[in-house]
Length: 223
Image (spheres, rainbow, N blue to C red):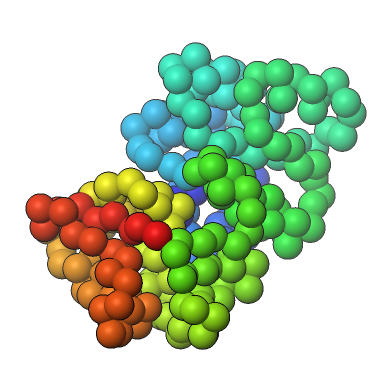
């Protein structure tokens, strides 16, 4: 998953990014002011935006209003140093999806990020299912017919995204855009490598044919 953090406290932003990268293997981009942050949010596909309110250049609420006016529905988690109801109410009224007051527990922030991303894809339950396949987003366990399947970190992330998009055609470019750093070349065969590895691990006997390829450029996970 790709997350944008717009936060002017650089150490805090970097700490959040480090946790999301190391614990959840998210791709994370950072911005330290409102104008740049809004520009990044408008120009790239993100699964979540973590947005501070009191930003230099442009206030966080103004950034949020602009994105929602443009029809950008990316989930937004607001970080605020003020725990008074009016501040939180303003954020919710402007279109944010959740609020977290500083200082906060980093574990709670990670849990809220995961929940917001799932719900944005219509998957409120932490356990995703596709036929005989289950993926527990809390424990990061993947099972087929109840049997544990061991995946590498990027195999897990690739499968996770396909399960969030289950029943839909997903292009290689979309997978690259949502899971990998921007320095990956679009012509790289990394996606084919991970899809091939996933097929061998989750369906070694080709019993279910869960991940189908369409025209060599798109994938669909059915079940």
